[in-house]
Amino acid sequence: MIQHHATDDLLLEYAAGGLDEGSSLLVASHLALCDRCRQVVADAEALGGALLESTPAESLADSAAAAVLARLDGPPTQRRRVRVAGDGRLPVPVRRYAAEAGAHWRLMGRGVRQLVVHRSARSTARLIRLAPGSRVPEHTHGGRELTLVLTGAYRDAFGTFARGDVAEHDESVMHQPAVTDEAECIVLAVTDAPLHFRSPLVRLVQPLLGV
Image (cartoon, rainbow, N blue to C red):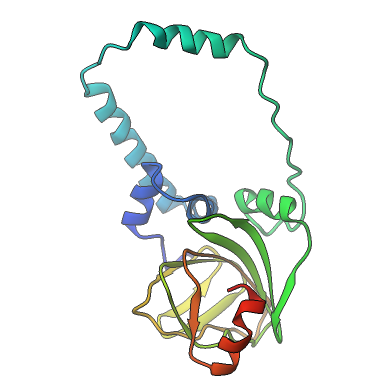
């Protein structure tokens, strides 16, 4: 049972189309697992649609209709089909990105590997696999960090986070997630700035890790 839901602010920003692609991917993956938050987004979208319908219409330039018709008459857009295969434990939204990224998991430390599934100027989204009992080095954040648990569970000062749970942290938070001993934990983590590690040794190799 999901104990840590996406915040209402995050869900409303998603419904309004205001999130960057990495954060949108995380929220969409959470919605695939969470009936409660899916309903919040549906309600927000319905409200937005009602407000849009009540807005007075504005006239368009005469050239607008011609431009739209010209695009419709043009050649069809070629869309690449993406294979949705791989780990069936992953929600379909993130599974699509993982399929495109391939299987090039990069070692980050003992028992920890990452697969970058999206990178842009606004955010980086990565899948992180953590072995049972492993720990992420203690760190804070240069900006917002969103984490969605996909398999297994981890604990930190804010509680236990299991499948479907979302954590949202910023530069005010210092924590050290520790995976439970029962099973491997896979999370989807989205950051908009580099992490700040407490350990000088980890900071030294941080450029090599890409975090």
